[in-house]
Image (cartoon, rainbow, N blue to C red; front, side, top):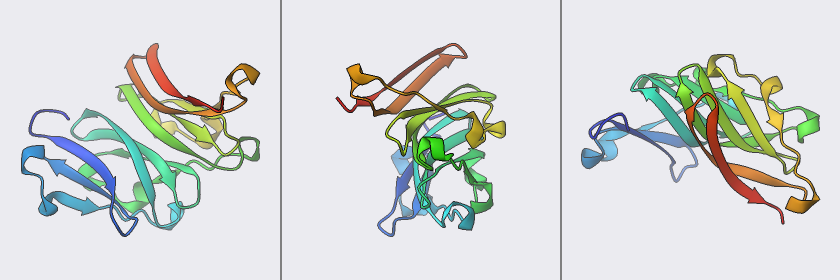
Length: 171
């Protein structure tokens, strides 16, 4: 929330389509809900899992598209459309897919997103979301002490060098 009367929430409707609510949460109703048509580039759908806003018109949202790839939207949520969705197609070394579960932005040009790849390893993407691409995603390979795999499910950053992420291992 940017204030007590300006919040944005993401969800998935019963038709498996992402939607958002925007405005004063005390007054939210069906008139405040807007379905997000994501388009063919992301498999005509997907699920947005997290969003971070620096201002009411400068937000980044992350999730998983219907093609099993991480994707993101950035900019003003009031104007998001399918062509703005950017798929981050992960390489075979990361299991050719994955998901971004959470994002936190310390500044408009420094965000960190976390999740997991299709090889069952935690995934981190850091930097300016305007320049994010799959090649910038970093796999964190967990060792035997943590069961060889896991995922990161939430992150919060207070500055460019201070972030805390949590998740689960396979152990």
